[in-house]
Length: 75
Image 1 (cartoon, rainbow, N blue to C red):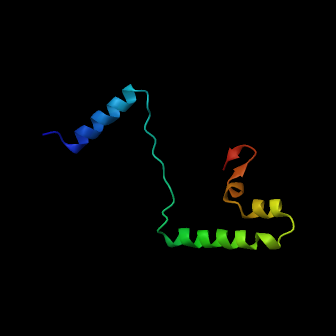
Image 2: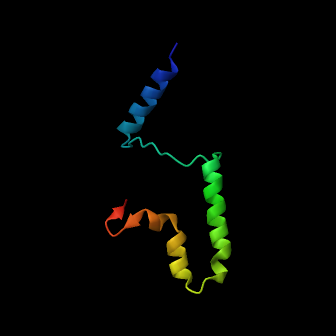
Image 3: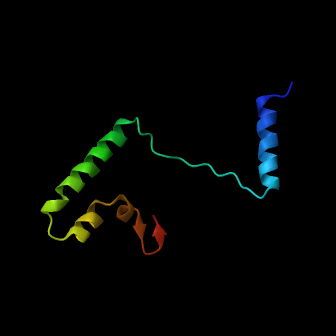
């Protein structure tokens, strides 16, 4: 009987032979209280956007990407 570990190893070997590379990706846990808090903050910020005269500046101040990006790339 072939174990699941052996099946996975064989699958990964086949994929490497085909020119693929395994990549693991971490994503936010949408069930966490922190995620809910950030989603609520971002939603409130978007809802408040209408009251701001300079929308581009407002979006830059509230954007997650702007908080983690500079001229050299991701921080």
